[in-house]
Amino acid sequence: AQTVTQSQPEMSVQEAETVTLSCTYDTSENNYYLFWYKQPPSRQMILVIRQEAYKQQNATENRFSVNFQKAAKSFSLKISDSQLGDTAMYFCVLVHNNNDMRFGAGTRLTVKP
Amino acid sequence: KAGVTQTPRYLIKTRGQQVTLSCSPISGHRSVSWYQQTPGQGLQFLFEYFSETQRNKGNFPGRFSGRQFSNSRSEMNVSTLELGDSALYLCASSLDGGRYEQYFGPGTRLTVT
Image (tube, rainbow over all chains, first blue to last red; front, side, top):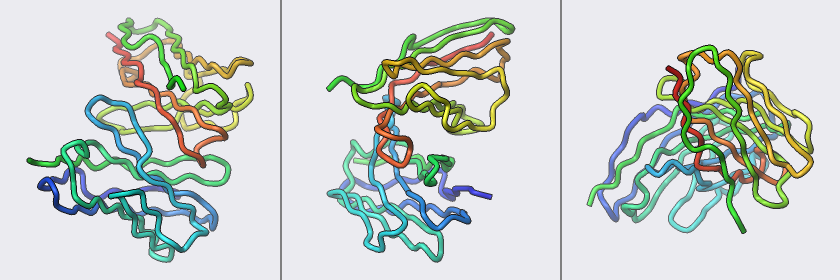
């Protein structure tokens, strides 16, 4: 089965602190892509970060970075220096080469002032 | 560059009716994907169109269908509406499917009574 599991339905963090969102997945493929998308309360989903499975180096985008552990099938998202605008639902997404997409259930992150 | 637009933004229909939702992708994007988002089932992939052809399909009944026009605009149709079809329907466009960054529209909120 090709599934994505986000074990933390809700999380909160103080502004300026660091938080890590967990994601594990299951796939029998060797080539695939992993994404974190965020959906703020306004509802428009936007890309946070993208990782290609064949790349060993962890992707980073400013305050956002991932810890990609291919053997363990783990793909966690770290948000540093959390800002109020980071409050959103975060989805971990697995995409195979044929564009088959699987979404996790999401983690609702609240950044507190 | 204009973003992904979806029309209408809100819709109320009665059980048994049919509905058509529209999505205009970002200029130059040939892939359009559709998703259903509900509190209970989360985000589920409906189908993806690329160059007017359905390239991927999720696990939804045949009442859900779609098409893509030569200008990449896409429509999805739901026939014989059921109460459980009430959801936020999201459309996303990309250069070539989910392996690449997807740009999401604001969604169409469908309520079936």
